[in-house]
Length: 503
Image (cartoon, rainbow, N blue to C red):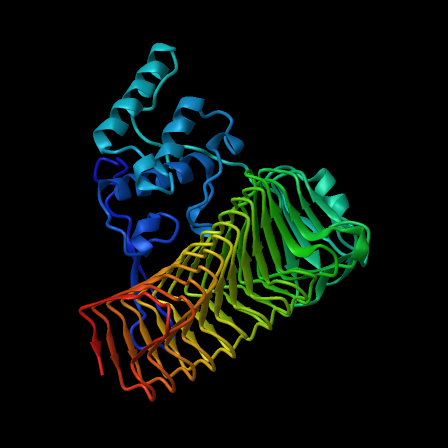
């Protein structure tokens, strides 16, 4: 706000409410989108570093003119938009908006000292520092928009022509029609389809529909069709930069609908449909990115594949009807999934293998073959998930797979709730397993999990069934109401059972 002396005062970052229709208790209080730190959206503790993040987001906006609310938690370097800013000031701002609190300025005094030293450097260099703030620290000039139409009545007939003449920051409006071209985004432009959903189509058979070759760009309300087949192109190819994709419909019969590869790739994909391709989204070679409120479905192979230390953040999305599985995290792939629905996939809803190590929170995984399959030293944390109504096991762990399940519900499966075999491990704590047609937990072939504080009840078979050299540690569990005995232990098995109630 502006006070009585016309000084700019920062008084509050505001509070917004995120309301989820149709749910009883899901209205969540959050900070202003874009300005609130990541920890304010979850269960992490906020502290002074959270305010530093919000201050940094405000400074980023003031120096670039870019609204952080359009892509929360993703900030491009300030000097990409405002080359007049010093590198030192850019570094100060970018440190303030680090995703992890321990990487930010640890207190405001530390940040103020650095900022004061920058002011001193400017003054001693003979540059006047304004004593009264102006309306905007950074005043941008918005280029005139360009309009593309196949009719020939507007600025250009192809989108590629418009991109070639566009200045950084130009908005390109595209009228309805089928544009048979592949676009190379080599400058910061925003491409917006003007028309109803599905009316603005970009179709390419000899290249990707979109190739990202700049630090920042965005597309909205486009239908993308890559028909390259065996020529091996992604529908949208993102080897670098922050490409914002909103309200688009994307398919590709070649490599995948979207390919995100390389440590410099960090797109934001929001409210898109990604479907009927060879694969949905492939993350590789340390690729990152935010996927929000998307539908990813009916792809011939996996809907999402994450590999080679890639680490995306995927939330509130639906991932379904993948013909080779919903999500595969392999070869040291990472990733965080929150509040997603993963269902009706032909194989497993989620496959974790070869040292894959994701975080999966508050997701629903159901109506697939298996809910979750963890193998070949795969790990990961599953927290507060519902895993139910799968044809085979709710969770299957083998070949030294070692995930952690916490506060999950695993129920109404057609076989075991959890099946651990072939030296599978894992830590299962504070979980409920109920109503499964097979054993609540079955352990065999040198499986050796740790089960703590779990309830295993109302199953159609054994509560726990251990056979053929199965082992495991059970502590403070309640096992009751199952059709067959609560715990059945075969020959040559060696479990440890402590402080459990078995009825």
